[in-house]
Image (cartoon, one colour):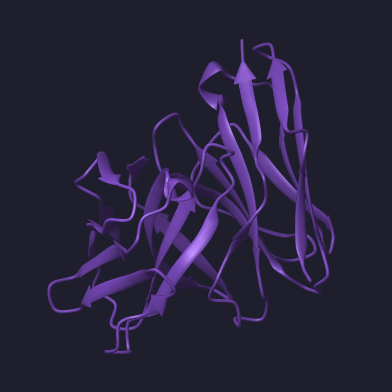
Length: 116
Length: 114
């Protein structure tokens, strides 16, 4: 079974600075997807970024980028130029293939607070 | 563009009462649909998924059931609620036929069982 571990329950960062959220996972599969989702106080789950395991290049979406280390099974999220609106719970998720569907396994989350 | 709706947004129900939560998707056909539960301060746990009308797969044994009476409608039900059913329930969709590698979530329903 896949497991996803986020070892930082809470983090804070000053506005405009950079912060990195950690995630490790365990799987025996060779092809999979990894995601970071953001859940602000509204509790809407918002997709931030995704990474295909077969791609060596790290994914980037504007101020968000990942450091994907497949051998180490590590998938960290870097947020540059942090903004107050980035305050949210961040979840790392692993996707495996079910029969014609996909299953997301989530970590326990990291609560990020951006300080003014 | 695709949108996903859930209702009600919040619900307070006594132990032993029935439950029906509804999720609908607009702007796509034959989506895969998912129900997740999020306990307080925790990540999400997949409860059910569906790849088509009437096709339901359960990931964890529990007091709940799911149904898909129409292509873009997914319902989560219970005949008798337990205190442990309290939580935040999220519906999600992805493209069907094995093409969808991203899941998009609805706004969620906060259920409190008293």
